[in-house]
Length: 130
Image (cartoon, rainbow, N blue to C red; front, side, top):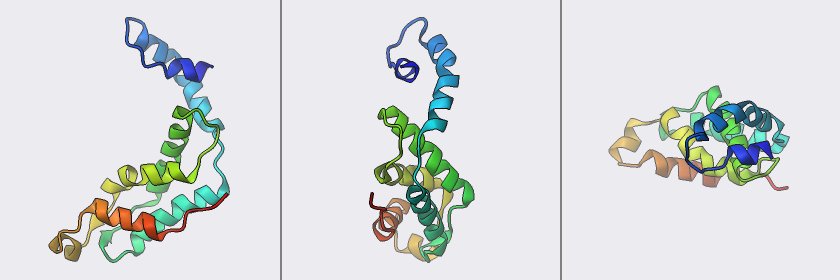
């Protein structure tokens, strides 16, 4: 209930104060979101694959995996779930990874965008099944 009230999007005089007061509850809620081992492996596989793709001269580092899992937990809270699903990782991966990878010279010459490469990445790494 505290999380839901903190997520209230109404704007008013006390909105900032309510959000500030709710931050500890939101942080606690994030930590309580369950992440299955298969979801963790999936997120890490995506990050590792960026380092193996020849279209990237620099792949994502270990903090990218952490960021993927933290943002997936936040998305689960926003969608009022107590657990992360593979779609959370898939939906957030482009935004989380986009600035953490660097296209190779060949990819730049061929005018292949980072988003296109990340879409290919998401198609090649198997999604865990429940």
